[in-house]
Image 1 (cartoon, protein in one colour):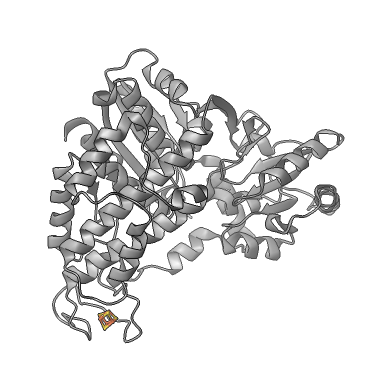
Image 2: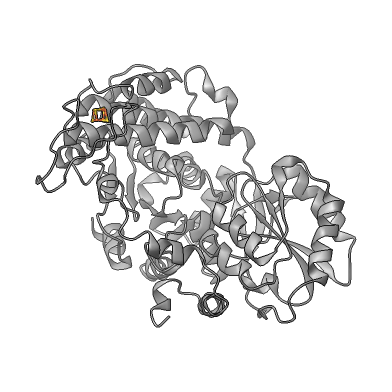
Length: 484
Ligand code: SF4
């Protein structure tokens, strides 16, 4: 526990982690530590990603073991294929957001149409459509294509996925919505319903409506790390996604409404702590949920953690182009940085978003953020612009391009990646000519030729994708924003 500051920068979270340890509760941090060292082959891109049942084959990064798979595939082909596999998965994760985007050619917003056309041209000129998906899947059926072909297809898919995300956004995004975040949301006597995953909008709104009528104790709905729009605002965010289990260990949450995408660790912890869980995808009855939460509140332990009500920050999430541009232009800064993304246990939670935002503000950058990183900044009441969690950086690029301010954008940094969707968007933004960095290592370090290929392809489109083979320090990323 003397190394607890390596887990989270938040002193309250540190206190909660100590309490969980005393109670013998295993949280995500214990599982993370037991997983070390993680599969080095896969982390480098040297574990075969093809849909082949003769494997799995792996290639020794040090050249002391297997240098090729059974079929003869070498490390460059394997690494490039893994990049394509991850990008293909990312596109599939993006598609449900806009089923109409699953067919026909991408219709880019006017502000970035020329950039997209230049990128498509650089990648061979064939129009971008859902055909890119089946092409990618076919290339991953069996090794035959060159690393160049695989890497180019990964970029085409990343561009396609980014285009689909962009189409979905232009249909639904406008205005701004209030948000709040912090442990203070859990303070005092209240029945607390935690919401995780992609809970249905109608259920949340129905819960909010019914909860509003209940007093003494009041009923509060809080998000356990997701940005969930409901009733003209975002559900108050009690914690970031990396700290959801830490919050549950406090004993304050009386029931969890779990949407699709909820981590199994949360469900297991709830089972161990006897916190009722309602799967929100099963269309449960709101009144029944609140009755269950109330019953659990009556059975609660005598001394749950006592949170300080002052620990709450507030802000507004900018959704429309005009609001994003206005938020980023406040004070007419000469430089803009986009810094956001998901918590990663590779680094002390909150460290990168908080340190970087403070340092960039100190260098007179306007900063905009999304996802867990944005929640950390709201908690700390840092003066930053807030963006929507899924398409935030893409929306900001589009808004700045519309306002003719794109030259002010000095970089887009993903402080952590949750899934292939985010990797695909990062790659797509680089393909649109943006300077992008990833604080989470990606599995390309098994092949220098593939890294070079990617760098050169992106450079031809005016873009950069910087990534590291180690948990990155804030100073490295600051240097990247300011000097590279
Ligand atoms: S495609 Fe080749 S390298 Fe991959 S698992 Fe099959 S035989 Fe092994």
